Image 1 (tube, helix red, strand yellow):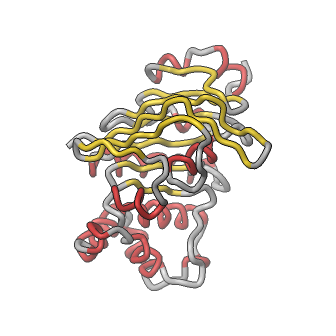
Image 2 (spheres, helix red, strand yellow; image 1 turned 120 degrees about the horizontal axis):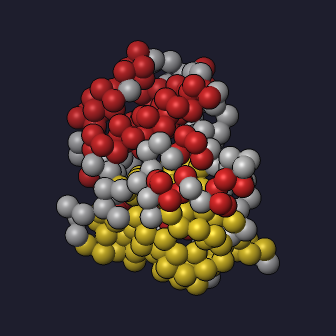
Length: 243
């Protein structure tokens, strides 16, 4: 069934500091859409608005899950997660003194996921075999790449329909960034997910994006209707490619 995300006219602020200014975007069913922007331009704030962690002052956020439309504004984060929307946060936010398996089990938060916990854990280990090898190891002792796999695996344990990924490349060596982006694409393809990924590494993000948006100072500065349009845009060349 279709799962999509429609954001229209969102404004958000922290106190008197406006961070998001009239942002609108759409993630269609089965798409990978990338939200490109350098640090401080509002990518993470928009992700938090979707997840109910920041309350927008204006605008609408509607998720279609299995053919049913849900208005996310005013819902708690728990309610949004229960719909099947998972966030892989910037910085991974793992529990370092819990094992890999314990971190994964904590990801099976929503009721539908708890009912299929054993199967989802098996799916997770099949997707990320390294986590199966490290299942009894403390999360804090993993390498950066392994921790990112664990953060993705924890989201997969939720059995999501829509996956939000915030800055997956942060703190990783280039080769690990490439592997992480490939893992996100594999998850999307294998489990038919709808993906919104906030990222500042244009070169890596464009590898798996169907299309995308550029956010500058809290506003959408450009919408690329395909990966080629993003690749050939002057704004992209200026900010990301140094041309």
